[in-house]
Image 1 (spheres, rainbow, N blue to C red):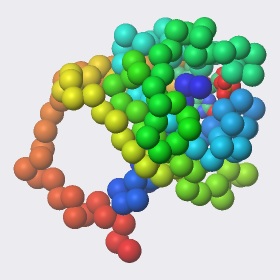
Image 2: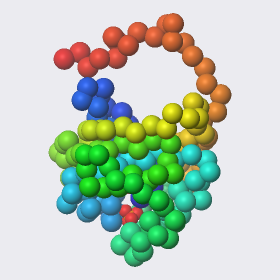
Image 3: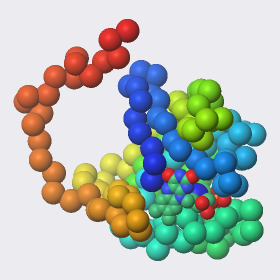
Image 4: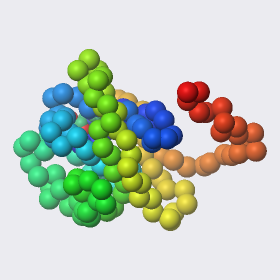
Length: 153
Ligand SMILES: Cc1cc2nc3c(=O)[nH]c(=O)nc-3n(C[C@H](O)[C@H](O)[C@H](O)COP(=O)(O)O)c2cc1C
């Protein structure tokens, strides 16, 4: 499935929150397997990204239908999409908010990131069928205080 609603929740362990509607085939697959891969696509994959988000794996094999090459993950059974810039192997860490909010909290157990390009043209969904594409980068690394981003626990 295509997913736009997600957020980082913690560094260590590496946690992300994902909103996956209960009507999606992916919802049941993840409920049963307690794992998934988050694949980070780039602009060249836009048609596949939209197409995959407009049909259900319940009705068709999207891997075949969208010519998606896969490779085996290291720690889980779900496969990685080879064409994506990054792939995050995830295990379900907390399902307490699934019932009320369809919000799955995953732990990233392995990250695969292509070394090139350094600044990939990744897609970021803004809603209503519109994306922004990563482009110019700006840095304030000298002012960055990572110690303030901890969880305070
Ligand atoms: C750009 C885009 C973003 C989407 N974001 C989400 C999302 O964050 N959560 C969600 O549940 N569905 C989202 N969807 C819808 C699912 O991708 C869609 O329902 C898909 O058909 C589910 O596939 P499945 O039934 O094979 O799991 C999005 C679709 C598009 C096109």
